[in-house]
Image (cartoon, rainbow, N blue to C red):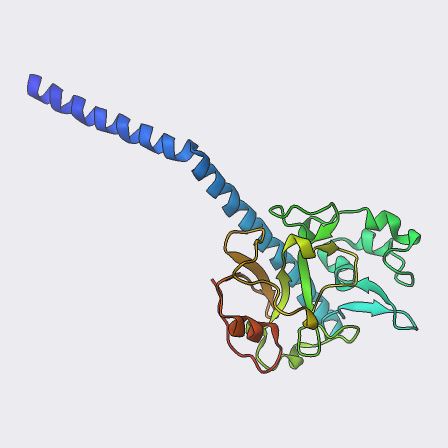
Length: 238
């Protein structure tokens, strides 16, 4: 009987040690930090999925994606694609309050400009209120062709391999109403030395609607291919 009681005591001791070990892991700053980053990553990716869904819904209604920006009769940029998809993000009232005939930074649009849109805000980015790090890729061989809208038929490399929206470094952040994004002349949106909001990766949404993370160690040529609508059919995602 004494031997059995000793054996039971040893088992109980091992259980207690295991519980203490697990508590140390779960309550450690390292674990908490990792959990927070995982949550931020998932929230950011969910933001991009919602943006992508709004873009696809816009495409279904109009037969094409919104232009990167609208212009006035003199070619001056007025409003961003982010403003144009508001009705497809359950922001109809905000969209109706914006005067699209006047520039985004006109006093007439001040109230809307002071409004923050949660889907445009990456919680891991240290940006000013109302600013976003989710930028469209704009250029002759990019998903957005300036004031000219594109349809899915223009994506010769396939919708699943072409990036629509890319998450950039917070230094490149713009106000969500701003008609300026990531231009083709800007080069690559990130590289190995980029310090982004998420460790080792930048998030993106593709023309087919899926959102994914792209490692910063990606081959620059592969990344260039994903930025093009034609002539770059490679893809490398996490």
